[in-house]
Length: 228
Image (cartoon, rainbow, N blue to C red; front, side, top):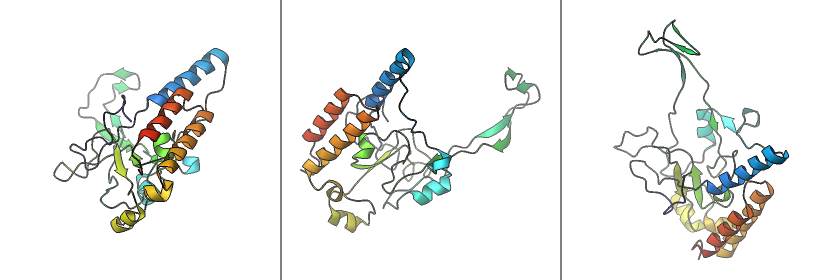
């Protein structure tokens, strides 16, 4: 997600294979700051955690995440991720510091690194599912890979990816896209606005969205050209 409202959507791909994902996290942060203030000031319990969890199989290995991700034409799921190893800098360096006598450090055992599991649209199941994931126009993910000729298939930048849905069912079938089209999901523009409105109300009830931000997001959906 971006730190500022995006100038355009989706973002430019640059050296990445897919368009980037500039979804703005401001509305979520504002709601959580209000919840934090209520918790610290009045003892009001914060919203229930939405963090991915191994117990619910929403946090899995890279291989399991790849298996769960839909087979979208032209989309390459990452084949690698950033690993973490225990680093040995020598006997004079410990958990609170010291003197480095082994440089570069000797690599030790690897930490277990897990990633979120996606649903049939390729969108993470766990986490705070914002308007963009509850009434989506495409697959929003937190990763991207480098374009061919740009050191593919290494991971690319930190801006994520946006892979749009087909507009019509005919287009989806012609492309071999397993994800429902916008037409399948919302039928028409009014249906899309209804989906955004429903999602906004759900997020407000979960305390992940403030009323003024919900109203703005609904207005933006009404003014959009989705299925017009």
